Image 1 (cartoon, rainbow, N blue to C red):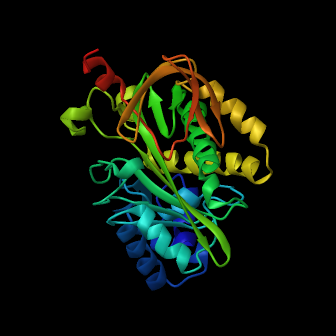
Image 2 (image 1 turned 30 degrees about the vertical axis):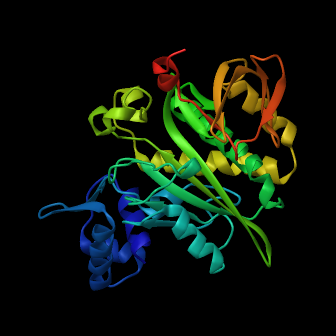
Length: 330
């Protein structure tokens, strides 16, 4: 009911009277008033002009499920969209919903998370209400030990969404970072579990959207950025959320069809790691060499300085960040 009133307001170029709205949506005036109040609580800005009537003036800078879903047109991802005001972790919230039987593609966003996590137990820092923090429930025909396929497909999806819609030269830094001009703008974390019904995965994404330079922790300012910093303007989080879900849906469709070759080609093309010198840490040991290739299932193929070629799996190794490499003595 409330969304019928919302769309009636959206269609109008001029303010509408309460009675005109009620007639258009076939409701009583009291029902329209109740719908308007519900919409305002949800974050919509509806102006009441005594002499002219009611008009939709937009919405507050909040993530509104209806607006994210509006015109989404995805096959699986975003089949259900939920927004939490505050949660310890969107991945944990998604697992609770997945175990309760939530459908594949359910996307859970949060305005704030208090214990967001990244790869290898790292913490993801995000001020309230400026970035995108989301997790998606996925049930592809994969085994839990194939989670890297989901990480790769999702990385490609996020990078392509930024390239196609904001014309930012997003790159993928192995294994799960999205960067712009070498600075991290997004991180991806895929978790999988084997249940009686098969493998279930939760895809977690943290994307810096409208975080200002002063909101980035001092120790991260040289290596992190946001969309607004790169563009020099604020960005609609609702639009970015919609673009992300649409792009992820396309690439996960390729994954479900087994088109690993296309995913791998795009991954290599967008990679900032191919051909680069890297420093890797595995079980406390440091390895240095040059990246020869990327393997969807096996990991990073590196020609070490000692002259041997080794494969490093993302589940067991971390890559030294660029600023750490610059400050580390030889």
